[in-house]
Length: 636
Image (cartoon, rainbow, N blue to C red; front, side):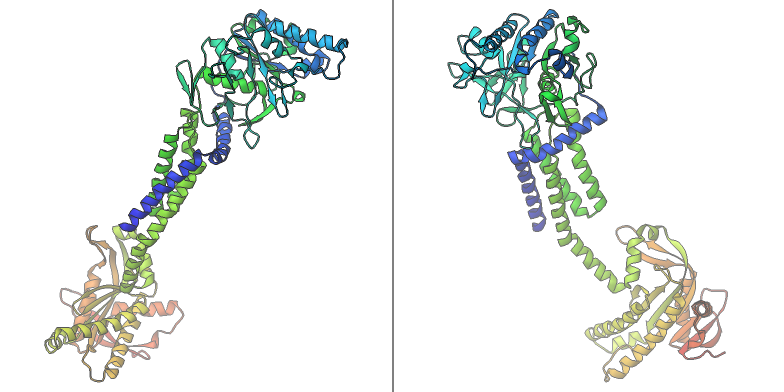
């Protein structure tokens, strides 16, 4: 019990350890690989997640680049025209996920290109004002910051113009927001970060591009109170670094189809500019203008899609808020699951069944996927499998130290009663033994002559020693010929050949056992140096058809042979004693012995059969010839 308690305690400690490890940043990196597979498998099995019908992507595709027909630095006027067309449809809000910020380094004050930059930046900035609201994207890139850099006066950006025109008293910029989405260490986007702005009083306000669109579209502000984020009465589950998981509904599709794609509707900006799409499709929509052309390098790697449109990342965040399908990583559930699976692994490991262990491992992987799909809960897969596997090992180790040790002791004890072959047969064929079966077997009965008088002339301790030596000699011979030692009854031994182990030479083995028992006792008498012992026995052997199987209740049963031919074996032993013989063998056994020897290509005359005539037996109407046997040739 002490070992079991220690194993259980160690199992629970392992469960807590793996739960803690899974919640660390290292654990996040490992578990994120399983999360990626969940996204891909969910889409392949069930299709895309629920999509809010208000979301729409206007893609700047290859056809749009060709229509603009100029370098990207000169697109600001074209984007202003695109915004004007979308505004005609009265959308709820428009987000421009394109940052065009030409620098003025190297340009003379009277350079016409500088004047053009200024005019186009101002035109795009002015189109961003008014209703419906337009949110312009800011982007922080390595080595270059579009807002807040020391040399910002050398950057011509509509965001800078909007900054100066819409600067509020508290310092917040409602129509500018950060479009950056953090990459994990493997280059995959799985999270969105808040990117706060800090007002004059030190209060933090999330400056996330998707959240700013959400606020304008729903007229509900996102509230942040460290460490929680709330919107519209909902608590948004944060994980670390003020970020939350993005529930990507499915892979995007190459643009080209009007308002149709695998997930979010995508409209080519070219079709809108050419009048192929009516601005009415934008009525009350949340529109994001973003690159979809591969040449604009805005394709992202997300779970389930290595070429996800950057604008669709923001739409995925918006969709998650609007549908309420947030992915939550609940620390309490992680700990509970790891503890539960640790206990389950220990319990299954103690059973020692590899099929149960494999099935349990499969369920460990299926359970997090089911929770992810239907409950939007991110549960550990890798660390829960580790917890389950380690606990299974501990459970099996306990089994080896306790159950298997006890089983080995039982097998060892059983093997002392029967031959190893018989033991394995009984253990493998338990259910067959229960129902019983009819078989032809050979039974051998032996009994000590004058057992009672000898016991009366010796103290009990001496009798016990003599019996132990006698049984030791006899059992060795019985095991040598694969006999099933059925029972001891006082000084009597009952042995079965041919059951439970199937054999075709059961009569031969019984006959050879009787001859060797006689010889072993004769040698024991010669070497006893006058020490008292049991050296005179009588043996009876018979062959016949009986029913063998398990007899008795489940609490205490034994393997038995039932039938008239079993009783006849005991009668043959009694008849042998009356005739003054040490071995009596029935005619049925003799005939079976001859048949077995002939089938094996051996000579049946290696045993001398000495007929004692036809004998009658108590309780039997029919008579049978009885033989004494010796080693040598047959006497006819």
